[in-house]
Image 1: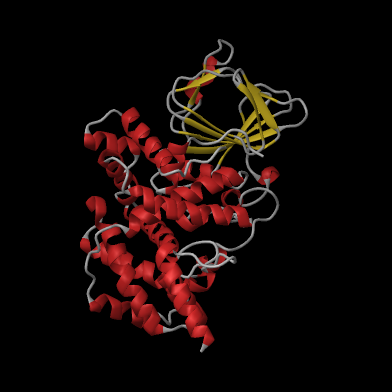
Image 2: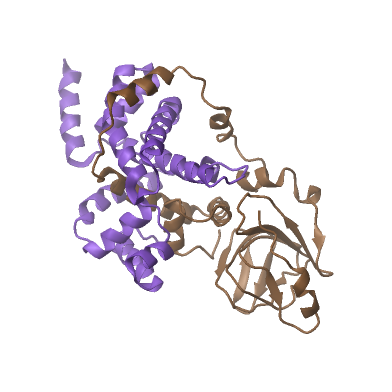
Length: 206
Length: 218
């Protein structure tokens, strides 16, 4: 029963920072759940996964109120089905399950918008992903730290910056649209985004 | 390694999925040349995930869960596999898909003795998405834009009054900047240019062509 003890320790560690061990393998609940879905096609695990993420995806679909309730449900269905079908492509060393699901939700929402606007394009949102993901251990370590840091620092942002980030990321508004809606100059919106990114320590030297 | 990059707020809009399709395609192509911007985008994506997780959940009924469970045995769409095809050669896979062949197989419109343009179809009806072929040492006549212009160097390089640009470099100009890019002497230059208004030649020698330079969006 040695292993059971180690698992408990891992769980404790994962509760504190979501990361465990020198291999850097993610041990948060949903990454483990997704790994299990990929390995065994476990429908009970998928049901748990669905109950956690589907309400977030629905919230994401409805923010900005640009999609109807019916389209929001359609998006939930599409994203969850895609998560099931692509689960084997999930690499817990590269991303957390929530980042992975967010990316699928974002891509499906973009495609849905384009479908609704009757865009005739040979490209799907997935085609815009870079051909190769960064795989150097250093980059991956940085990515892990960046998520933990963002979590910690999010609460320290002034409300006007959090508001703009939510408009851009969740409501899918461009900086120009956010500026028009909040009756602010475009420059103010851009500088709030930049300030937030600096404060969250995710700006890198390029 | 690319030296000229999209600004962080442009990358934020890209990552949030709100840039127009043609501009998005240009930034995506730049990321294939630029590990730093890829890393920057990855962090901006982490930010998106944190915001996503902090949304107030909206209840989803069991009916929807059952619908999804009933569909789990469906065959995944073919496109899920296509998305994982590795790129052939150095050009970003996304561009190769739009080009359906290599540079020599495209149809090129000759604009001046040193400039030819090939228009690619993205489906974005507000932006022209085109490849510019400038002969080695050739010059694009001085011009301005009424809208914005994104440029990505795909092969060779060019220079203008502000600097010189090489493979993978990304430039974004807002309306009314005037410039006259010249290809480097060593080889022909091929750039991707994304415009929302046609370019306007400013020199007397080429100004007569302006009425013929319609935006070829789509």
